[in-house]
Structure formats: structure tokens, C-alpha cells
Image (cartoon, rainbow, N blue to C red; front, side, top):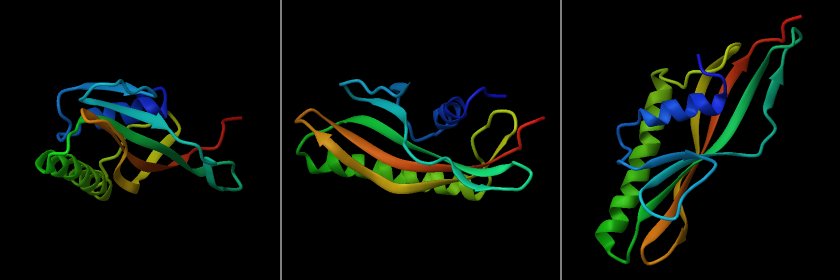
Amino acid sequence: MVKSIIEGLTDYFLQCPLLKDGVFRVDALGSGPVEYALETGMTSPVVRTYVDGSSVRQYQFNFNSREAYSMDRILAIQNESFYEDFCNWVEEQSMIGNLPEMPEGCEAQALTVLTPGFMLDATMENAFYQVQLQLQYFKEAPKK
């Protein structure tokens, strides 16, 4: 059992067969390719609260990467294709119920791609890409 949602997400994405060899971090992305990072997002976590105190919640986060980049069309297509495949993988895993492990008292319900992979910044050597995602989960009522 994981101790936090971000730990469960990290373990989950480390299992993705599309990731290349590289560093995987949380809330930090280095300056050289190939690196991946999960970054927590800002949103109100509670979607719905039930009378017993249990709730449906959301956890928004970003999957970031630093990839090799140049003006070469082939490399650009490879980078964009990776993100297309990555988003498809996330959606397929969610549809079949293969979701991240959660802390005690929480159960993952769905993992959704909010925005497909897009480039945020680029130099002539590498580029910073991001996918925005949302984990929806059920949280039990606090024990009295």
C-alpha cells in the first residue's frame, strides 16, 4: 500500500512501457534529455461530498518531460508521436481498470487526459513537454 497519491502515481507511470531510459522525478525536471517528472497541479480536490462524509475527489497533475529537440522534422514527429501514444496508453489503462495504487481509504476510479502533450519551451538542443492529467478517486469518510 502506498502512503500518498503521488507515490502511487509515480509507481504507476514507472510501469509505462513507452518511457525511455531516463531520470524520473517528482516536482523537478532537469535541463538535459531524457527526463520525466510528475508535478502536482492546483485545483479544488473535492468533487462531491456524501452525507456520511465520504467523497469523490480529483487530483490534477502534470506529466512533464525533457526530450532531445532540433529543427529536424523526423525528431519532432518522434516526440509528438510519443505523446500521442502516451495519452492513448493512459486512456486504455483507465478503460480496463488498470489504475494507480492508492493510500488506505482511497480507491482510484478513472485517470483522464485533460490536455494532450504539448511543447512549452524549446532550445536548439532540447524541449520541455507537458501532459495535464486528472485522477478521480473515492475517499472514505474519516473514521470517528
